[in-house]
Length: 473
Image (cartoon, rainbow, N blue to C red; front, side):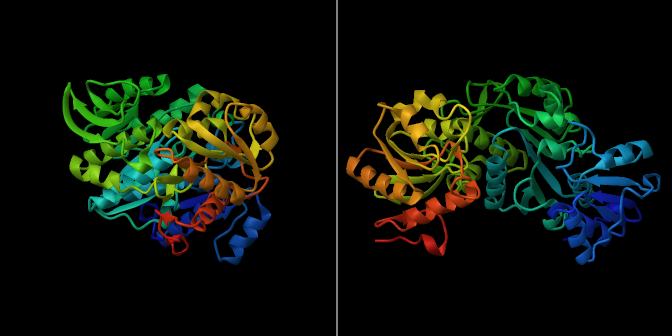
């Protein structure tokens, strides 16, 4: 926790008393602001009072006497309709901002740098990978925002410190002054339309990552979808160093990895190459895109290509996202519990061959039918949970199917068959294509259960840290 010194002497209302809201209140108080916290949840209000936080009923407060409203990013700003605090703030003519906006002002005042990362998919892995590369290169780095720690739970901004921040569209909507040193937009597909009203509005919010950049700053923009390609054209007009990124085609000027080899090109000349194909945590086109973005950010901050390549090779990946957790001889074990629908599971199935696939849970609409074109990559499937009979019917005669019921039984059966099959590059893959709620409270708990079950198999060499993950014989 550190003081929000840029708000000294200001009167500020904070709506939303979850972790980021309470951290913001404390930071504002430490910085000398007069703070009034509130929430629509009575238990949240009572808990905050018990913690000694300054609480005031914002229904009764005169917003005309305030300087700003700090709104939780989870509270509607525009759609389906503005929250009542937003309407009061607009009527009073005060700014409506988020904790990330105040943090960015603190960073600017201190001379710290920000790498801002947004997009529909890939934000978290790109954020983690960028932070990893910069740390391995010896920079003073903190990672947070929409991933990990709330911004006011990070270390205090100081000159030269780099903050790698994942930023959701909700957070960007509350950052009118957003101007990162390097801004990253991975891709745009339909998402959160209930909060933004339309794809046009959603894309416009993402585009704000680049609107205020200008000379001396870097814009890294994916161009493999039309929304991002159009945003890239606008970003070019800001004077920032625009680096277009593609993983489906070669670019004469940009960063590409269409064949798994990252190439940094400027005006047709290759400045650097990094072969991503042997990096276990960066399998698949979606991860190649993440790597291109992280490379671009690190390069913008002065890290040499060879140091970037070495750091990427040691990236462990994010838990539950195509995370290699163990090996047994030539058999790999991959935890992709985050794949809660067919679209997410497609990325993993596209990235491996000779797969011993553990799937099942609460199926989404359409089940696994959209994955039929990838069934040829699967040697055998092991079904768990509520969707067992539905998935067995879909898989039909395309592959051997074993109805295991539980994850523990599925792991043991997959290990047995992968060893017996002796196929090159065999992978025991948990990529459920389902929600977890029939057997586990969330995908994280499901992924942890997979790791535990794998760690208890004979002859396993764990490739992730932890006392419970020592090699077993």
